Length: 338
Ligand code: 13P
Image (cartoon, rainbow, N blue to C red; front, side):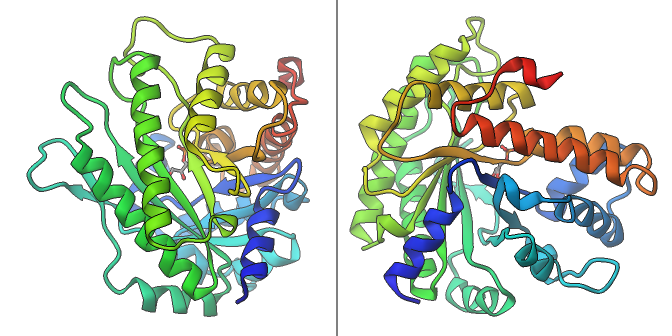
């Protein structure tokens, strides 16, 4: 894979009016989501659910790529067609989550580090042979009384940079995701400072590890007050703080930034993205890579009656994809929700 090919994939992931569908929940996480909607977490149900999502008519109109979990990348739809082939026909790039989740960071109680570097080179080779074009690795930064520590930020950004270098060696575009969690009662300024420190550390580490920025996508969390903070922020305040933070820490060479939704409501996630894009052109396209904010309404409808509600659930997903596609262009209006 040449440098140009990596750049072409990265640019396609943030093509105008399109974003990424994150359906890469591990079996443990999807079990939690299914439990909330009374669905048993069997392999067949996971397959049927992801089949519903991936066979949504004209999914590729607003979805450039979808991030899968290991099991899904290997699965086929009920008609025997591989999900990867279904995605390709729909013009949706197959992506794969390659981290192995978080573990406690030794010496720093309450802080987490993401694991999965051991054996990654071999796993990436297999993912290429299965049809993956891009990857995702999520680091988790928690805000609390005395955290994050700089040791936690550095351990995580170092791992992200090592992962990104291995991806590019294998011909895969790395999506680097340092998620600053919304949990806590901190205010928006604290979130700004932690996000800025994390991003600066990340881009320093990517530079150290010789990662080609032009072939890398950043998956960022928005700058928001903690969920428990008494003073919540307006849509404009979130958009303004997030843009200032990104401009202060993300090189212009990056082909695009996509956001995670992180526990925001569907409408909030769309409105925040739209507000940023209404604030004028930035150095990078700003789009979405939502998990919950794209799936949760469709998931609820599907779970009410999986045999009968496939069309209705797909319509809900298609609507959220379209509205987020418009938000990525700054062309969304809240009235479009009705
Ligand atoms: P949410 O949009 O639900 O935060 O998920 C995105 C994701 O991929 C988290 O890693």
